[in-house]
Length: 492
RNA sequence: GGUCUCGUGGCCGAGUGGCUAGGCAGUGGUCUGCAAAACCAUCUACAUCAGUUCGAAUCUGAUCGAGACCUCCA
Image 1 (tube, rainbow, N blue to C red):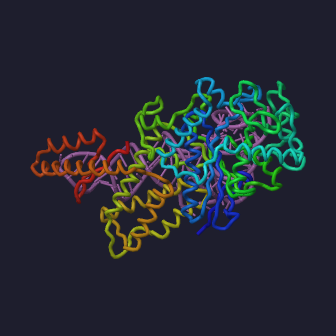
Image 2 (cartoon, rainbow, N blue to C red; image 1 turned 90 degrees about the horizontal axis):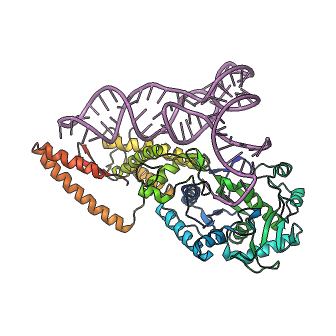
Image 3 (tube, rainbow, N blue to C red; image 1 turned 90 degrees about the vertical axis):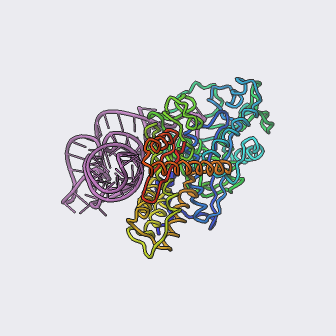
């Protein structure tokens, strides 16, 4: 079988994945800035890496997955007088910066839990690593690649670029950057506009501040990721991920910082998840063109005709490849929901399948191989899902006695089908209370089915149709077959 | 303006130099008290123009269109 290949943004090629330490994988993903609620676009990026994390675990790797929380805030722009976003929001709401951070961190975790995310191995915060960040700045100054001006420290990009290529990840040339720098309205103290801040002096109204060798201030925009990834994964590690929009300048700056500090490339494989668009436009907090995850569960959004379950939305997102732009629409979600229900129904059908002497009509081993090949080809979840649907077809055929399966193949099908759906794609999750309620609900429906069957035997179709139709209105669909009546409950 | 990506059937989305994923929707059939579901069969395609090739939707060039980044943003 083909081994795992991953598309590396640095080389723009799919490369065979070979961890630095056999059997272990170090993966760092740039986490959210917790100054407002996560939107669905954020969820998509983290979901891509959740799926990747899950698959690496499934392959048997010991994975240390680090995803940070940016709670120190980023500068809004150079002309922002040093007030960072956390502080700004705090002014607006007249509360403590850390209260804002806490509120949205909790929201972030709640949301990801609903979508059945696995927690990362370590979830460090920027504010918890100020000392480490200061140490890195000292090191960069010592090496001569940073300079201090009026209590701020900047990274000297021009100097760095003489020996290295600043822009190698995003395919930029420093000359182009110099030509295309927009606002040169220069109240900045930087030597060159391309230089970026490692440490910023805090002015009087800036709430978040820490003492440093350069005075009271706060760390620069890109430093935390270098500090935390180095601390927990080492000077070189396997995978660094994030949204496409972080490629430049954020990841470029990370490379510059780490290479200056440690003299080597920090990351083997750079991975970038693509954007989720809404109405063909990027979802972004700043433009207002976005939906919140909560909107799916309530259905209360101008973009939605009904509510959807978290698992269904997860299925919708994973039906597209993580490197493709996915355009969101209500119509696409509705179509996905039907497919999702079909897949889940098949999981139930499979539980009741009985094996026979031999398998006919399907090659389980080659199907299994195809599933792994799909995932091994840069985590191609859409292809995997297509393969799952070919198994759905086979499962339904067995149910109809149009195909058969041997005991051995049934075992393989069962473990593989369930592993890919639940363990790797991470679909369909119910907690204990929900399970308990579901069981009682199912028993109640079975009772109604029994009453309906009695009515049908007595040719009382008025009653039998009433049961069927009114259940359907509630969102429960009855499905008659030769073996009796089954049912499905709409996912939301 | 610069850099890059993309343009696939009614919709969403894979893929790729010849064998034309998958889901949803449509059509015909089987089944059913009637339906639905399921099963079987089936129809729509690769932005435009030119080139390379025995052969291109897939490679090259041009054109048109869309998006991303260049500024905090997953």
